[in-house]
Image (cartoon, rainbow, N blue to C red; front, top):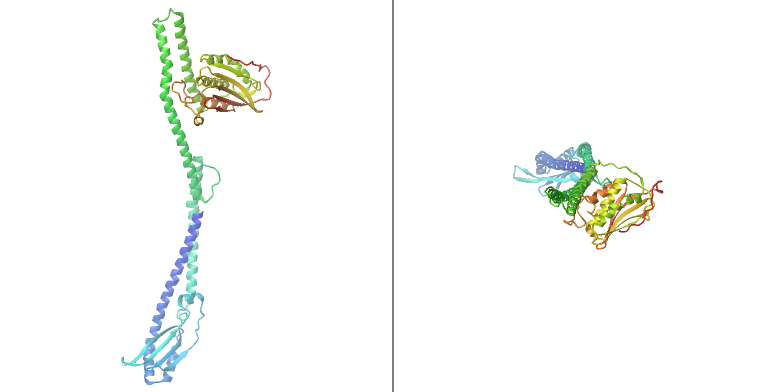
Length: 466
């Protein structure tokens, strides 16, 4: 609307300037007319004035001077003889009242004109002088001036109204609608924007541009991560496949088939590689389901202690195979939480698996519960590994990020933490990490707690150390 107001001011300014220009042009024309009028009077009276002056006829000269005052513009007539002596003079007061505008434009003082008088075109006999009132010589000038000002102002007002209507219906409304569409389509800031419609549109475009830049950065990051993922997945998937095929072919050819220890070793490698391949495919499928919103959650009241107890042997096997120690701290695990049993088990398996991957030789993996809030129970998995640099923690839960330091020799699709975070949030919880470089890490999830455990659940689990 500010531009419309500016247009109105400009229109009024143009109207005012146009009115002033017209008035000044009219005043200039009146001054030219005044000179023409004076020339006409002098032409008319020069011959009789010359005759009266030649004869030194004072009576005739006075009658002539008095008769010239019949012209309403003349206020004084003077006839001088050839020696410059006064022969006749007639004066009267101005009949028109002077206004400030007319005085400024035409002048407030009478204007004098004179002409030398000659007989036979060569004999100088005197001089004729007249004074003309410029206001009386321009009858109606003041009214024309007022009419011009009023006319131009009316035209300016009409032009202003027209501009307001044009801006309102052809510009302002469209700009406002465009700003609203930009705000909706660009996920721009919904806060109030100061200024007029163009300021709002400019701010909306800034917000939209910033949102597009952020989206482009995220898309580029995701694209780079997926590129890295696809480049490494061929190796990740070929390695267990090649192991399965290789050991199976050896058994098929009879190599080691009569040696129980070799046969058991081959079969164990086949099973291990198959499980690893199955885990890779399961992570990819789970992530796709979660992104598509096709993963269902069956929330119920359950005991974290019971879930941990059900999978203790699995945890022990995962930790023991890598020469690590396994510990539990179940002092706060008796409180019941709201969660999906299978999804909680999947999250804990992912966290324990990562704690094993990134631990130090002879290190410890600890799983337990603490009560951080009366309404929340925190389940954590700690390791005594190398820790996580602070600059890498922001992308820790991003998809396709493989390992805390992106080690190429550590297997995995880089989806474990991303899936765990999405599963935790799907159960109404939150996930985080505490780490100190060189001193291990603690990954935790917090789930909504119930004040009492459901009946029939054994929450007393002894501390386990292996």
